Length: 337
Image 1 (cartoon, rainbow, N blue to C red):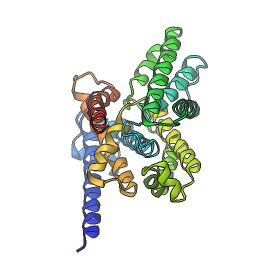
Image 2 (image 1 turned 120 degrees about the horizontal axis):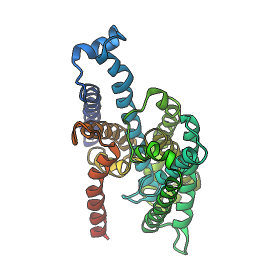
Image 3 (image 1 turned 180 degrees about the vertical axis):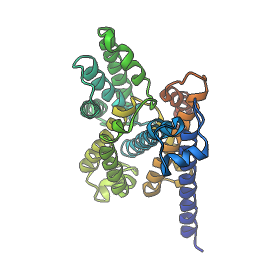
Image 4 (image 1 turned 135 degrees about the vertical axis):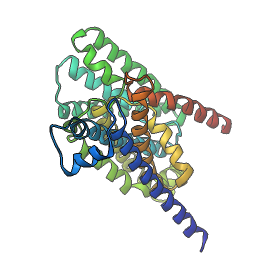
C-alpha cells in the first residue's frame, strides 16, 4: 500500500470517527439538561409521539431543534473561518475577528430596536447586509497602502471595525431600553430558546454557503499558496476572492441571525481540523464542518451545567475556550516571524 493510499485511509477513518462523535454529541444534547430524558422517552418521541408526555414534548419542541441549530451554526462558522484563512493566508482570520459577525449584529440590533422588526427572515437579510458592509470595509481598509493587503493590516482593520460596531450597538441599546432585555441575551450568542421555525429560513442560505465552499475547495488550495503562485497557475483572483466574500457572508450572516454573534469558533476549528486533514481543503472543509458542529453542540451542553441550574449563553463558553487558543496561535505565528 503506497503512502497516498495510507493517508487517504487515515483521513477517511478520521472523518468517520468525527461523524460518530457528532452523533453522540447530538444525543447528549437531547438527553442532558434541566430535565433528563430517558432512552425510552427519546425513542418514543420519534416512533409514537404523545403530546401529553412532558419528556417527549421537550425532545420534539426544545432539545432537538436546539441541538440541530447548534450543529448548523457551528458548521457554518467553522467553514467561514476556514475559507477566510485560505483567502487571507492569515491563521487568525475568522468572521468574528474580521468584524463580519459584528457587522451582522449591529444591523440586526438596528432592525430590532430602531425599526421594531422581529421576523427571523427579515432579520436575516439585515444580517447579510451588515456582514457584507463589514467585509467590504475590512477589505478596503486592509488593502490601503502601497504594499496592498497584508495579514497584519486585515486583522487590525477587523479589530477597529469590531470596536466601532460594538460601540454603535451599545449606543442603540442605551437609547432604546424597551428592546434591551430582548437583545442582550441574543447578543451574547445563544441557541437556547431557538425554534425550528427560526432555523428553517436560514437553512437554505447555510446549505448554499456550505455547498459553494466545498465546490471551490481546489481554488482555496491554490490561493493558500500565495497570490503570485495562484496567478502563475492561472487562478482568477478577483473571482475567487469575490466568491469567498459571498460564501462568508452567507454562512456568517445566517448563523448570526439565528444564534447571535458566537465568536472564535471560526478560528479554533480550522486549526484542529488541520491536525487530522492536513492543508488539503478537499479534506479540511468536511473536517471543519463536522468538528465545528460538534464543538458548538458540546459547548451548549456544558453551558447548561457550569452554573447549574442557570444556563449561560453558549457564546460565553466558546469565548472562554477560544481566547486562550487565539493567544496561542498569535504567539506561535509571532515566533515564526
